[in-house]
Length: 285
Image 1: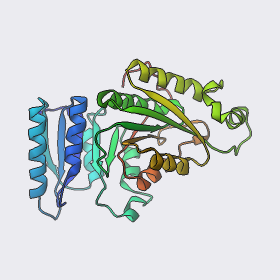
Image 2: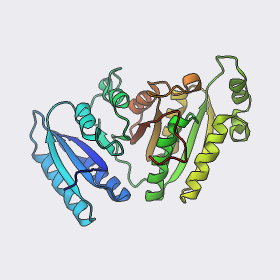
Image 3: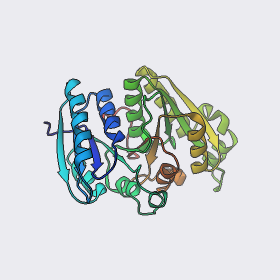
Image 4: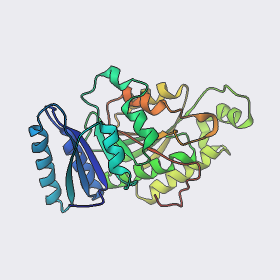
């Protein structure tokens, strides 16, 4: 048992199978993290879920990791909020694999609600892409993505995955010098004297210092479409997306709906977490 879970695996009873249990256990073993199995009772039977949790618990025990099992009722989002309220560093893992597409696209959907209410890292699992060999992090190149980038570097180091940073330069819609410079030199962004270039230089350096192979891709176009295009063509095992709910970044490149819209369109695991404009690479999170 543990009072301070580092991974919270939220599971709904009544499903036919639980591949996300094995995925969550694999993540915990990568990170050498303690686990809380947060099991949600519903109208269906709990037998299949209990069996999956038992198998997951045995694997954690074999790996020397602590765990606890908690049963709760109510909505998944509210249960996650409660579970991580006192553990803001805990990685909350949940699945929407059994939700219909129209539910994923609802404006007040689960992921949007969680991004607005929870500052902890969130990992939405639909397809269990394993092992993790390629991680894509979509970044606006601003401070609020630093926590996400650090988490992605941690996962890449633990799994031996390669890290790809994706930055989308949108068409200029406002006339100011920084926008013009990025628009005119987007293909050589890393060589420009912009805050985004300085940001990505630091991210790549932090990744290399951790022993992680990292590269920067820069695309020009509409943010959501370009991210989805890269995800579908790049064979990635995990996609990181910065949350802008608490951000006031320049031109609001990552509007509140970008992460949720991409999440609805792609099936590989989505990692997201909120940050602040005051975050720096020198801070510990």
